[in-house]
Image (tube, rainbow, N blue to C red; front, side):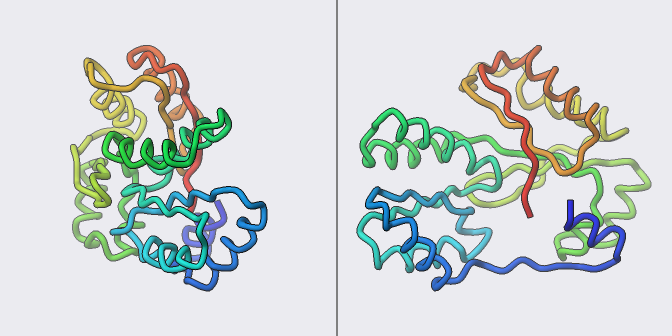
Length: 217
């Protein structure tokens, strides 16, 4: 919320920076004092140099394990959640790491963009393309595939209508979904849009757990 306010209402811009090796070493050193195994699930390696820095920092510790999630946000969150449950149930570290490496290939993460101006600010989209999308009321979807973002289906109309069609496209009539858990992750979406997505997932997805979360920076 602070970032959106900073950019939208103060007209400023901001940049992200990778966590450096020293910061990782300090963090791992603090965690390692407990004597347990540490599993760090990292932002996809093609999105940031965080993974490479974490791997280098981990070489100083025998009990720190780095996982390249190949994903973003709650795409990584699936791995953390399942790993935490296994740890809670006493699973050995080898089983947890093997589960994560297998599940990385199965995670399906995607999202719909309401406004393209943030992509323009980040250099991922031209102002001309953003203006055309706004005039035509187009909301593109983005799919995260193996640590890369790819353009998906383009939706047209109000954001609420686009989200409805997007959710149905992602879950309806698919028989290869693991219905244990799904995340609805959003950035300042209206409550009615989030609730609509949740209800559609309940109606068509038959998931055991539906978690609503907000994006980070």
